[in-house]
Image (tube, rainbow, N blue to C red):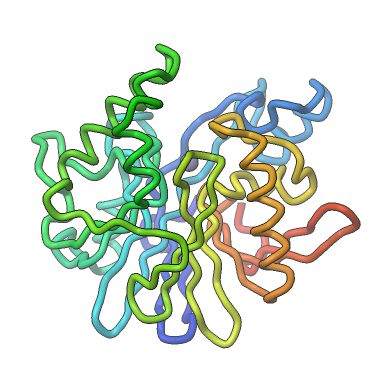
Length: 286
Ligand SMILES: [Zn+2]
């Protein structure tokens, strides 16, 4: 883990990118690799520096600064999901910005670790001056009958998503595939992990793709692109999306930034037979 002042930063064309963290979440091996055998799963957990079938997933949140805007892609979980999370705002401060400085908040999808940090405990918006952007399909899914019909164990996710989405209903801008949020920052629809999951591309000489949970684990998804992530809500659709996004990244020589990957989750991808191989741009910082 990075200490509070040791953030990974880089320039990408006209964007200054700093990878913040909301803190790690502890997940069991079945969530990282549902289709793995016990032996394969033990290897995955070990490579994530975990033990006893438990390992940390990181929460890498890109802070993107342009001439005009201070942008966050996702806002972490606040202190509502796991006790190790909720550190985004303090890390943002360490990077030199207050919550009031944020002009744009983009939500990739409405899972707890990505959206539950939207509100403070008193119910006020954490980033009160920001324009908020959410995928149209994601909004419609969580607000609609299909979410109401999800199993009881998932209903806390539904309640949390509705709490946070309702809080921005008067100010939200909806996103669709191909939209340009600010010049050079494009929306890539990557459905499957959730119904309206979005990834994002920052244009420069070569693109940077913020995959978020379309490519959930750097230790699993490149080598085993057919394997699901435990939180994929439509695993078959997520599988098709994951391959399409990785093929696009290989074709375009893109740099990738992954939300749950070993910090800072920035690197490049190449084809490796029928699978892929990831090379971290930051060296081994785990
Ligand atoms: Zn996630």
